[in-house]
Length: 379
Ligand code: CAA
View 1 (cartoon, helix red, strand yellow):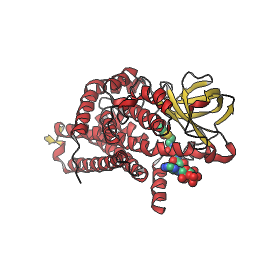
View 2 (cartoon, rainbow, N blue to C red):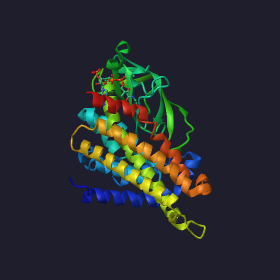
View 3 (cartoon, protein in one colour):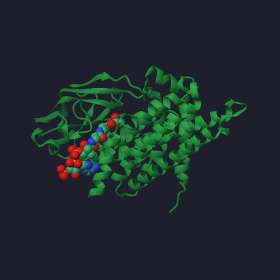
View 4 (tube, rainbow, N blue to C red):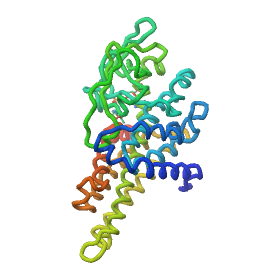
């Protein structure tokens, strides 16, 4: 067993860290305040090769692995969790199913521009009546000649409105529920594809979250992803890896809050000494650092398993469960260490705390992660 990162992984960490610190951190608070998605950041990530980290060069990627991808999401989220989830949804949720289930032609037409960052990706599963119970979706797709006609709507779509390519799930055989679910590749300009309400959120405010609507939306029949009836499995397998991307986002948020709180505890003086000299503060920091490290190890383990072609569904659920809770705890304590200042927007810790909350909710709530883990144990 070797806990050292390879030279390649260390290089990616340093590159993303330096980029995020110089280019993303300075505007993170303003973008959060204004709920502004900045496409130029995504374009800059594309120039660095970050938009296609795990995909082979023949499909526009840089031929690295899922650990490198997690490290990148972590380092982005250390400064701006919105940017972290932009990359996570783009890579894990949109590009991954294309790589895994796409035909050669679909990989060339859709995965390649996503990997190169010429296009931004998104994933549409959740509906107003179908959240944790993903199999209860109502959106339908019926084949008419050379097109599938989609009707229905999806909510809480990360990168919604900004994305060019959406992987979406619909019922081709409504009587058969999850066995009648099919995956489709939808381009933003397809007729009948509309962007609905944009959510006003507590956190990750510079990552757009919208409704997407299918109103007699015409999708060429060659844009089916996988086979009819395979959609639910594709959705679930996609989320297995996606959850580890969210774990990496949570590790980054927690590390960012720990960095800020440690620096502040050293420089803030009360009662004639730095507050870190008080056990009440230093023990908090010790617990926070331990949680961050444990969350990181679980996350890297799941990424390593996926990169090595080993099962990772249970481990990914565990990493998201642990890292999401760790991020919530660490960011809440960071606000506490900053005291009244931490409650203001003059410091980044209140943003980290708001951003951390979503990691306990999306890509399956913490309660769903426990179901996935418990079912794996029961097997
Ligand atoms: N891999 C492969 N197949 C899987 C699977 C997996 N991980 N999980 C389930 N399946 C298969 C099962 O084997 C089963 O197949 P058969 O019918 O052939 O036996 C089928 O799928 C149905 O499985 P279940 O009976 O277990 O399904 P269920 O209805 O009980 O649901 C669940 C299982 C895990 C609770 C699932 O509904 C779930 O994950 N819910 C949470 C949904 C979620 O995470 N949503 C997040 C939305 S995306 C998001 O948040 C993105 C964002 O914007 C960032």
